[in-house]
Length: 124
Image (tube, rainbow, N blue to C red; front, side):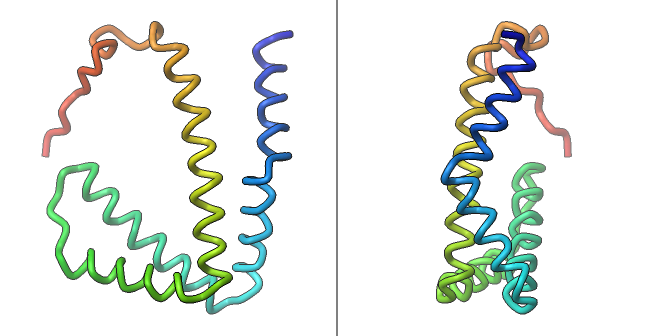
């Protein structure tokens, strides 16, 4: 079996997983309600902004962090939104686990200088 066939099988298994199916159902429920959809998107955009700031080692205002926490608290009170966030977390965790397994298996193909977890520094 070729590596591409194996990758196709993995993709199919992911699509058949409970994590994937649960996420698709939760996502469709969110898309069906414009108010919930907007709240989720707003939360995700704020979360992304904070993650980007962290990635580039920028200061994150306490106000932005509190706003994200406030939005998360509001979403957690809504059963459909909470289910969506939980399903999103589960599918993301599964995909990250698969990526980690593959990454560890191919560590030898990293470019020179990266084998020792010696990551380049981001210059700000």
